[in-house]
Length: 264
Length: 252
Image (cartoon, rainbow over the protein chains, first blue to last red):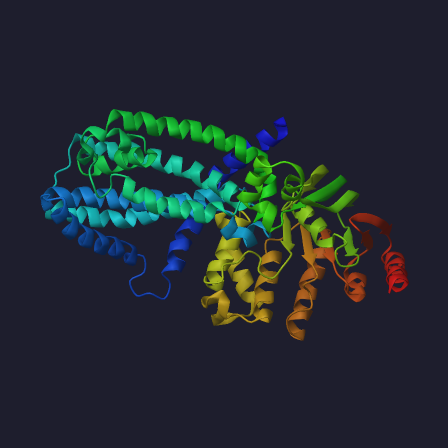
């Protein structure tokens, strides 16, 4: 690859980080506009989550014969984490396709569009935190040492989400078949990832859960939220995914950056 | 000092038809040989611009003329930095603002005010500049309370007002316009003309692509005739317009 393309790609990412007020505002507007003309606004986001958790919680605690006091916090932490992660993957597919008119009218650092997606999903995740707090209050969950790990867990998830939005955005703009493919894979991923069920239920086949990358990203965020220690292997997996992913993304982005505007 | 220096700029656009954009064609490309492979791998390469060299300095007001598909809009997008050339280089000095289509990348569901604010952010205005930016547009557009309404309720004339005001209110040193002057009612056209004249008077760079000879005569002191992505001739407005006329009538 020409060195110029690489340095232009890195400059773009750096410039995008520097212009954070832009993607913070646009990400916030994305949410505001989505709930425009509703009375409750973004609170709908929290309500939808609460309704889903109440429904799933009642039924599955019976199916799995679990104590509601144990199961509901686990389910809540897992669900809001899953919404966050799957939201970033889903939106990442249309990072650039959705802003085609902007890209064709105004010169902006290209990576800002990806960071906007990450930030928008982070905001939606934060809107779901009150649901978790309510459940924690209901079942008198006390914060402990593991709770502190929420901060690095959230940071690692966001930084990984940023490269996912960037690279998926590039690939899906070029190959449009990937969008429905990823959407359908995500639906399956929800059922094979320990969100509703616990990986302990797999008994001696727990390795199946560990082969699934989503398991680890759910674990590093959910487990601290419900006062559990995430498994060490999950930290190792997520940190390596973050590094390797960014390396791959930078190389892909540097090659594709100037072409994206023609693909969208 | 504003400068636009294009050196041997070429842009070859790959046009991916539905087939080549899909993954299937890629897999077919990998998995088969012979003719199918040839078919699947076909990407049409359009040569939108071919070796364009132009040096535009302070005080230059360029009128871009040429038939449909000659590359006028593409050249404006290269100048704006929206497209990067596949060959050649572009040197750009000065704040660029472009009015290429009426959407200006605005959000349909956001209000006029929100769109103004977003545009300011996208242009990279500082807080201090933003304070002046919003009222300036408010005043220029005369849209009043409509600015609190979502953009999708706007008529095309109102969109025109807003887009024109946004594009010209950041005091650009390089202003690129793609045949939009003319939409809007007579009063606004007069106002837009006055604003354009003011900008031109500040000895900035102006590039207008238009089919309207009177617009080019009014605002420009040089003209560029594009023909199939190449510069056919550069020079005095009347000379170039005459050549363009002859060319049009010859092929008509």
